[in-house]
Image (cartoon, rainbow over all chains, first blue to last red; front, side, top):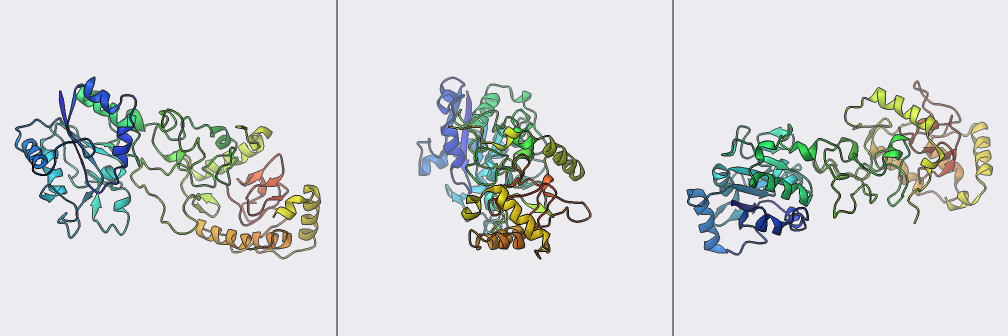
Length: 320
Length: 107
């Protein structure tokens, strides 16, 4: 039996919604089949007020073992570093985060806000938000760069806006069933099993990417979304086209550009007119090229791909 | 744009060739260095009457030859459909030749 406690900071509950839609395994499976005891969760917990506070104090005192502490949303430090803008059970939430993280065997940061700060931490960051162990790309965050949970692992980051439900439940199962040692994390502390490949891996528009045929308007069934509509699939680490959403689809399959929400810099756009859903270019060349490709190679590849492009690549191929 | 699209594509292509061949002065500069500047040109194009072919060529900065030191041309542009010889940028939507260029060029 592994005790799990889940709290929310500067959050929209999106990751909770995602978690509750998990299928393989489902949230119920975690309890019935995988021995996870959910001590409390914002949408599932039954304790309120003093009872909830007593439960957390019991974890902090060590009376109740805390195996997995999941935190969703940013750590709010405002105003002036006090954290008073986000109070919970009698004290700033960030104090609970510190106390519980120090007691937990495993600490899981869930969603882009908890991992890297996400939308709340965008400049000018009025809530003084940060992630559990990162602020954007910078390691440190609220718990500091040297933090490790009792298990010896740093914060396990599961980013996404929201994270795919199966990424969450599968990691929780791995931890709860004693297979945490199998988890390897990348430089941003994401489990490599999910975050080594790109969003583009498995995208149905890959042939259009290869032949440099662009989608130029939403809803087009032909064309790659990278060239003009701001898709970040070629430089975003996620399995969105391998582990499909709702077992059906993904953003790019549905014609929606990837926003890069599993990367620390998300959101990438400065929200100036003409920048959202538009590929950012410098003198006609994309500012962010596919990972590992340099400008010279990209230009050469484009010339060759255009010259070799077959006629079918210009047609809508998914005709109803 | 619909009015131009309604015409025979080869007739429009011929008309463009004539206009450019006769020395139509187009706005090849400034080249949009950023997506925001690019977007402003698109706004200008959207404000044109749908059948204003000349306006589209002028604002787009069309040339009937490759442009600049790097010999940029439609052939390598991501909006160019090689087999249809067509510029697929919705604000332009014109038949074009592979060796032409305009300042909305993107690779």
